[in-house]
Length: 323
Image (cartoon, rainbow, N blue to C red; front, top):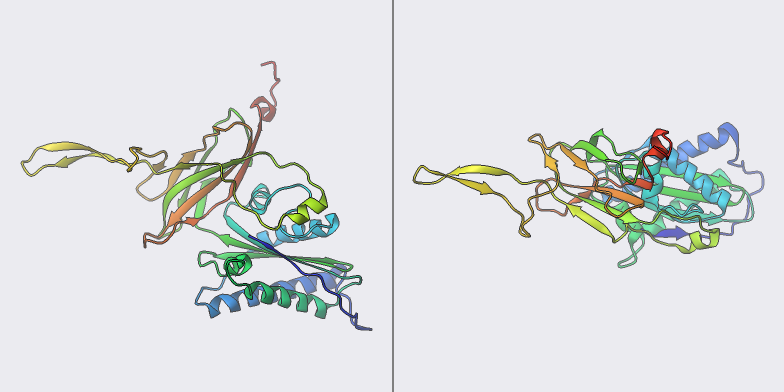
């Protein structure tokens, strides 16, 4: 996904109330958040898509991120910790699939309520005006598989940040993945797809643990993606007896076209259990659950759960390294 950075110079209207501080700022944030939600859903409905529900917890996390952006003087999808959006939100507890849009505005004065609403409106309009192949924001807004959206907002002085976190919620977790694990620790997850959906595959992406980066480097990163290094896992296939026409039976062992039999268990009710192979050593492993509704469409990335793996098991259970 790409970021949208907008720099503005406007004339401050004398006597206009400032949207800064205390209860007034909270009231402005609430009304502005719902206005951004209204614009997103207006554009989705105009393209034949379902409107999205506001996700309060993800919105709160997005608010925090926007505030950090202003504090660190960064824009876009990264700040000085070097974490991409899927990792940042996963480490904060989000289990769903996430895609992010971001916008930033700067001026040399504090913003009025009117200016904040106008910047949000212009940001949405600019995203929707994009044309292929440079239309990442527009495609994210019009994601047909999104179910919810978190909307983050922050402003201070002449800095304004907006983040739209589009959520794909298709998995309920009975055993969520941890966010940190030892290099030699079993990591197990289980859950079930939403009604009408089925688990098609699980991919595990691996990358180095992000390092802190200066603000100018963060600002130069205008897009993000999951790492190319990945391993693919498929549901385990069945073995069964099949009756022949002559009344005898034969043993059938299902296989994929490459000869594999599958890697994880799917139960009759569609639920799954999966042990994440930490085969690539220390780093960050991001687990993507792929689901479909069986209508021949492309599978949906229904999770971006990142796990930091960089310590031996004794570092997590409080034991001494000499044991």
